[in-house]
Image 1 (cartoon, rainbow, N blue to C red):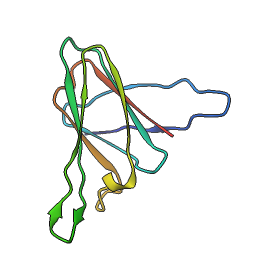
Image 2 (spheres, rainbow, N blue to C red):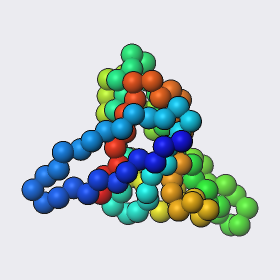
Image 3 (cartoon, rainbow, N blue to C red):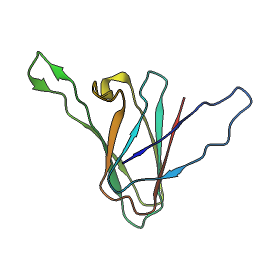
Image 4 (cartoon, rainbow, N blue to C red):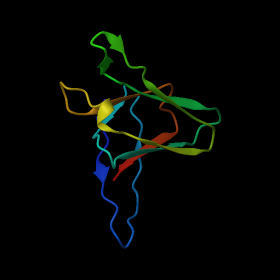
Length: 107
């Protein structure tokens, strides 16, 4: 499992560096201004599942966020504190396939 570094976008603009998705999943920071960008270079769609460790009413699991990325497409999703694992302080991302998939975390 890899940790995707958070890149801060400056006023004058910033080159965004994408990292290869890890077959075992990845983690990233969370926050109101944090976004996960996913590029799918594969020939078929993939899904990224962001775990939601929280509960509602004390015992009802909150459904995980599933993002489908079409072949050749780039998708973005906000990674708010709702996705923060209390044990690690990070969000956990699982990939249906990591082949030809890259990701970047920005704020």
